[in-house]
Image (cartoon, rainbow, N blue to C red; front, side, top):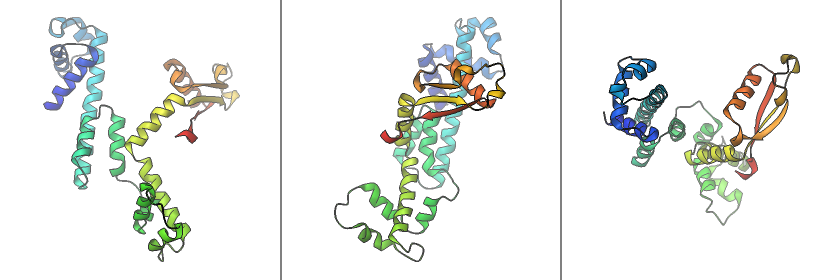
Length: 247
């Protein structure tokens, strides 16, 4: 019930509606009433909400309920691993978008064996932590790697290769890093399209996009839909040019 109260408060705030209007509309939706029916015949219950407003409530309700369900699943999974800290739990519960929950869960999500997994099994995690800490100012690379050499890791080069695999995985799974990269990519990347197969576009429907580029943040929804269709139909190749060197 507490989660449902939060959902109602969130929707009311986002749509600038009274909580009672949202509560009444949700009850009608949960009873199986359709959006057009509610908008036309239950105005006295909803406070005269129109179809657009009712549909907006329906959409956000579905998203937020799914978000809460996913949070519960993620929290349970991490808790069962014995890795749920109060800080992590608070961050997951506070997340308002599904992607943020998934980013927080990623380091704890069951995964296939990776090169980083193998490196950890070979005892190279402390070396990776040394690299991540960026605090060492004395000694040589060979001296720092020496304690980690073994039959499985016979050379310094292999020790650092394994440590780098661990570092790469740790950084890639860091929620703050992923959020920053996503933001910077959206703000600075270019959406680039080129011709893949002109014969697949005999009427030239996608001619505008045969050699096209535009800042990602400026691409309107209708243009993105057209580009997606062109890619699905095999007419266009689509890629992002992002500021990789600056990230």
